[in-house]
Length: 241
Image (cartoon, rainbow, N blue to C red):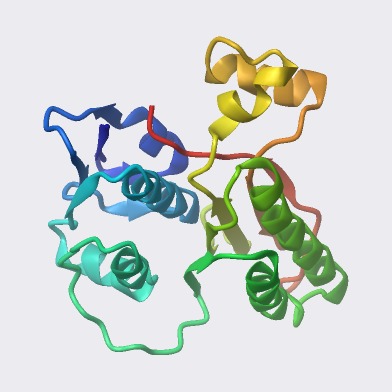
């Protein structure tokens, strides 16, 4: 069992650094009380962590951000709905649904087919700017859904995406996929990942072993209105120790 105590930032790296042993048997505390800045990578990592606890029969105590605006943002992103699906009481402030082109809400998928539908959603967000890149993103996300089922030992995972300008004035679509499966070490043990997550990353990068899930970013070029360019990806999987 483990707790997840997040500081001001909620990125995938922050989530993985913030997992600590739980002092209470049968209870995992997920504390976002101090968090004020979230990325899609961080949010799917939080959900994957909570999903792992629930699968292990552990009750989850969720602490919403103290900043009400941040809590409202998380509700608009769909975190409340995903926590409801996991039977976790969350206390996030309700926000009426509205169309927001800057957000692609947090979604859960339970099959390759349902992931394909979410990939279509991402495709439609990028296609007006660059049809070729939209097609590449669709294929990449569809494959990520297949990888979750093939490599993690589970059929379900989580997807989130968001338009940002974090890398300057150029619009950037950042998206993430995560699951609560075996993780790098469990999945890549047969490739020599026998000690820790670092050896698993070495197996994935140096040996070329398959990675369980992924996140990536698409950035529009600076010389014209937004359109797609090539994407970069790296591996992500979050599970309790």
